[in-house]
Image (cartoon, rainbow, N blue to C red; front, side):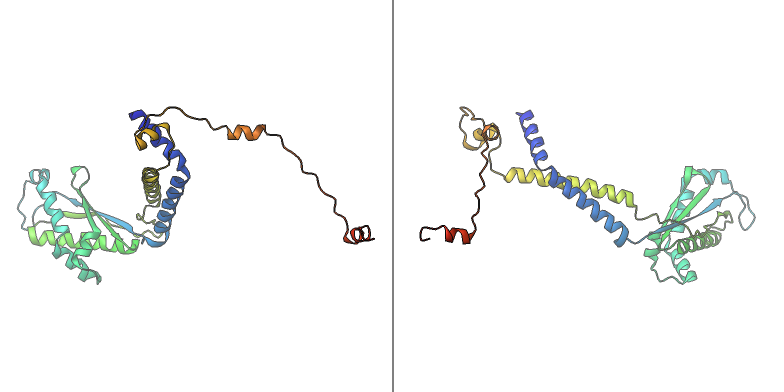
Length: 254
């Protein structure tokens, strides 16, 4: 019974293959149009800062090996970079028409390999703006650490650079088109199966028992196509047309 249901489902999908293909192509077209005309391009810039093993501003030595080995220090620095105070300072220094929450959503902080390096990525509408914000965040972060923690152990290693030929990181056109194709195929399959469920036509021998609850006695094969091929074809004789003037002259009243 299970194999019969699978075969019927596969047969239904084969019958609706053109519908499924059409919806899949429609999904690809919608994704392509969105990626090229509706989605706004987003550019990325990155700057890196190093947490070194310098002394405090007062000159007292700290066991930096122990501090830097602790993940709490990286978490603390991450919170400082994403704090409202730093976001407000960056917005004020650059004259940005952004709220602190909007700016914070543009910033991402990572610690590659649990090293002493902290990467600050910024996404913005242009690569130049992203680089400007990333460099300002790193500079203000360095100042904030010195003021709040009395530490001068932050150095800017790799400032963000403006790249005129930079390509946007969003939208990902290939990924969007693939998602549109997958979504179109999924919708097409669901629609095909739905149409199969609401279709009450009898297509299989099992449909008689399921629909009428009656046993199937036999089946009559359809030989109409074969008979059409065996029937003799008669050629119609073309009737000769007689000119009207000749028909009038040779008529019974002539």
